[in-house]
Image 1 (cartoon, rainbow, N blue to C red):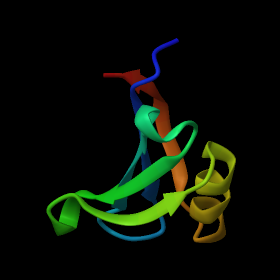
Image 2: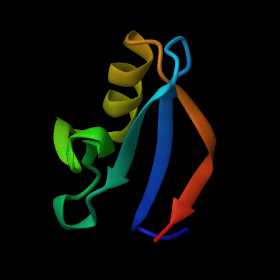
Image 3: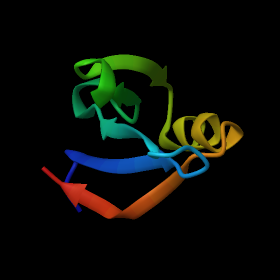
Length: 71
């Protein structure tokens, strides 16, 4: 498994769905960032772990779309 990966998450309750990108940060050992492509890729969260990023997204009812993509 690659250390560089990303996932697409979306709030499907909105029309159109609102999409965010979760991305690994291998240079920061285990941390993940959440990027907003609607805001020119602005970083909207910096989580200390993947689990923390996932919980942050699930609290706002985001769902992961598809599988993790290696960069």
